[in-house]
Length: 511
Image (cartoon, rainbow, N blue to C red; front, top):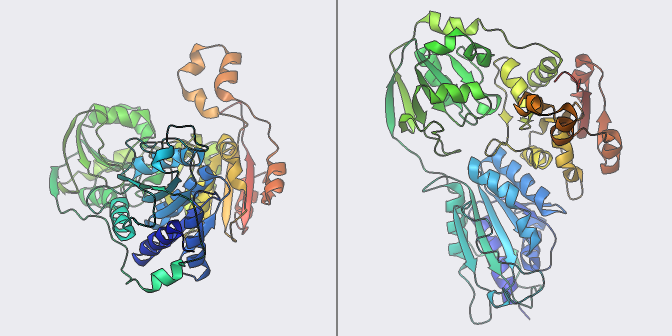
């Protein structure tokens, strides 16, 4: 007997694939079994890429990483209950950084909500205002099968941002028993559908000309891209580019602009032009709040106006005028920072080559911001919410895009996502986790609280020192483990293939 649940699931998955969606992620569960069967059938026929991860939190961040690297939507499939709740951190990051995710969350039928039914919670609104679209899809029954084609088309369009910004969408799919059957197969459904290319995001023609002079600088935050470089070089302006901006290269890039902002040069800045989402330093935010601000609208990060003082914004910015060469050269005279951490981070940055580099949202990305030289490194960082959650899983997802990955992370970032070291369900990938290990949260030494409470209490509440045996953890999960004693040994370790943890010891007392 054909189950209506299976009929609907096979059609929905086939409709997504026929429209160009290729990357599917699933964790095992009973209520989602019809979706799992359909995905498995098409994966077996080579029609899609399937990744199975044992827990939903790792699942979602792995899917996020793949979508970040490809720009294509990842489909995340879960069973009901807490499985859905575990997607929330990755959904928040996808929302704030405009990463396309399509969430297929299986659910009990609506009549079982609020009556004490097993594994049932209210999944309607569980992600609140973090979605580009949401549909609570009624259960497929013999007399009524939801329109899978329309659901798939709208989900793709909203996830890719054909009208607005890209981001996560959720189809909350109610299923009633029987939950699955062997027919129809998703392969047979797909064979009857016409294929079409994946929809692309909206294009914008809006242009704004901005007067520039010797009091103007360009700030490139996360995902600013080539536009920031083009604007700065065309106007001969200093470019303050964060490591994950995609703009930290070219003749205008300033290495240690933060040091310059602490000196007399900062007082000469009156106008800033912002691309992407700057988040790394207080001096930059202070500069923005105290200047005339022009902003390039961002498809990735949406509105940026932290000082509520933006004069104008547009999708495309063009400089009007030209700064003198002395203005740019005065900023270049600021030397980059140099210490053990800087040397470590520089070795990873300089050795990146064509391999994508994911930088964890903790102390090391700030070290990179003040020290690494301009270079065309393909660098990523979860800057939507600047959290360390799911960084290991995000790295694995980026590696799945085909070029491997190196992840520069702190030891607490590793421990926060240590469950994602589980290689079950993963094929061979080149993933290097390069851990700057200073045995705790040294980044907090830079906060005001470090000077306002007693040392022992500060250590307990913020430094949270850890003594985990990372080598033993690597062995337990099946990763190669290397502990280089110098930058030269680090460079050799970075030549290894496969799943590798590189444990680089840093001084925990002089962070």
